[in-house]
Image (cartoon, rainbow, N blue to C red; front, side):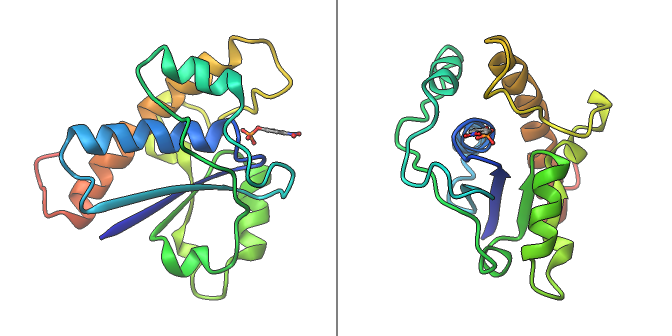
Length: 162
Ligand code: 4NP
């Protein structure tokens, strides 16, 4: 089993979107029995809430259902449970690097490091911005999800072709 955790600040916009997009991708590829997904926020502001309605609507337009997801906060144990802890931006990467137990920091990555072709480091926070931010977030997440799956296939699933 390969365990993947997506992390942003609120766990109501970017990281549940990434969880939903990546979950659908691995289901389509028949890999949902070998890859497990979750998402969490570094803040405690929205614990128990479903994803922001704007994120849900933008995802729904691309056929991705986020309605079952609920916000939780990150915890140090996530670095034991998850092989990949993927930060959406530098602020969350910094918070996670403080949370990570010694010896587990190698599990922490910037999510967009799996989409080097984008030339970007961060998935920008769409919460306070214009409405089209949610679609831009989805574009980045779709690209990085494909790159992440390619990486996992090569690193863990014995697939040398990808
Ligand atoms: P997220 O976006 O980190 O992508 O879930 C945010 C959601 C809520 C807030 C900030 C960012 N907030 O300030 O409540």
